[in-house]
Image (cartoon, rainbow, N blue to C red; front, side):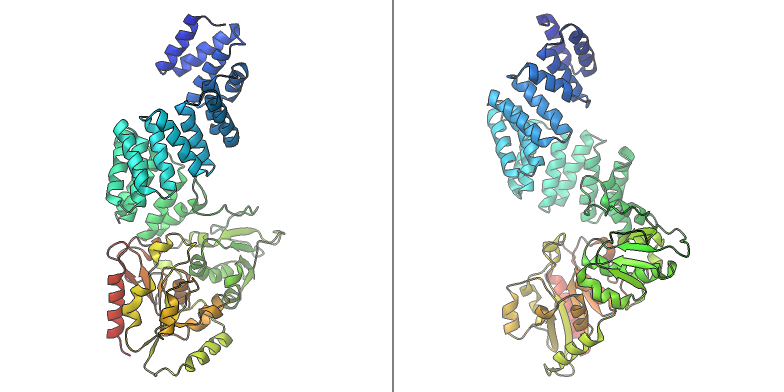
Length: 556
């Protein structure tokens, strides 16, 4: 058993933050007191705070000190650090059985529960910790983050601010406050919070990233890129910073650097995409293929992305002597088979990959072809509708007996609910009233997304809705080519119309997608597209009025 003096010396080292010396002294003492749970706990704690492997020492400590709440709490921390979350939760619960008023253990249990997605339980654990220890800044901040994830933004912001009242130099809390403020659209305040975090902790890579995201959203692209580059100076392999730098570069048309950075979209702690398919073939990035080489192109992201980047399939077929296969899901298969006859269209990744020598994700083809803003493949149409289905819809439209001067316009006003930022891309149908009331126009719904508002407009005769008859994109395309204009929010139908070479007007939100760039009313990707962009985030009325004025001024 170590003497009281020896124990006091170890505690003094811990309080002084001399963890390496604490580790060294503990190891020396274990040569004499190998069965001392206290020394094993001290050693484990020293290893834990230094980021070293602490599990064996802390496991030994809890074996020798089964009723020591601190030892079980520390063991939980070690288990959480190596991803054994369920075992960590068990250790925290054991600590709380021994000592129910152990605030730190309640807080740590909350962290582990949050990591397993049990947000409500995490919030309860944080609140228990704060009832015991109200000025526990870290737990107050963690509570704010959990409330933010639950969508309780006002409470989240209040808790982050309370954490900062307790500890004003708490960089992580400033960063987390910024995240919650950004979620509620308070971008300028979010920027201030991130900057404050970086004043305190200049190498805080996540805060550099978050600052860049907020600056990007308010249109300060150069400053956003500077933030991402600063994050990469601190942490060169930071995937999220690489990707968002790439998105900024795409947005301003600096494609030569951008496509390489965009390859990070599968990587990082929060990748933008599901895992890349585990295909044991090298990625084609523009290498000269041999005459017998075959290329397997893999679909990715949303339907709009697939429609936009399908334009590269003929180029790939030319490069590989028409030995290209492309994996495309059912809604696009018929359209792609007709539009790209030199490409084999597959409905799934084949089990036997031996016929192919190369693979390439669809949105990596611009990298392989070294695409610049000037060399985007622009010929339209590159998508071809089914002539039989097109004739069917032509006849059905003829059956309406519309006056010859009537402009036939397809419309999509809501993005699919599964789409990123769907509410920001969407309008309520009532907001389209100035358009739907323009004389001399017949409006055709091209939207599959359900909308209970639609029935009243259909009943009034202001909206023609045949979308229930659409089986796949071939049907949408066949109706669209019989129309004079397509007006759409930023969703797949806009890409379909652009790829068909149809006149298309896009409802473009203020924080534009990278592909539409900034401060443009045309698109380098679709020669027949016009962009109508919000001047103020969330404000569609001015965009609708502008479109209505254009329609009323256009020849009938």
